Image (cartoon, rainbow, N blue to C red; front, top):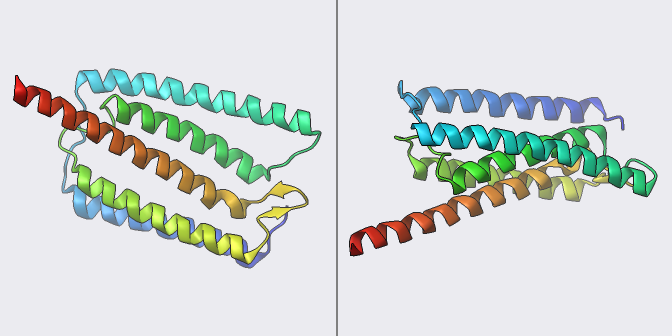
Length: 179
């Protein structure tokens, strides 16, 4: 699917702005802080990378099989690629969060959760704007305008995993207090 130059420029500027703001945020708030994971976390992160990669391969196969069954492509090439990346990233994040290897030792979890909520709200707004602007589906194919919906889903899954892990941590600390 061809996009007009204004749409392409909007995507480019959006990615550029997010990258620059991310770098500024990292530089301003990291203050030379070294990300340290303990040995157990490193092992879990290694397994999470493997699971993330496997999930990307499975996503490719499932999407190809679905296209084979339908008899035609139903995703724009950009959406196809980004969904695979989102699935792999989500599997990595959820696995490491659930097994307590996502946050490094001195990481401020509340600050991370704030950033996660802000990113989710921004993507929800973008998704709503894309839905109302039309062109989400063209000729029976999901277009790049739908990608914010998938990003929102991923961010919600990650927030659910963070909340789930926090509840596990609370229960573990209560048990330790009782003993």
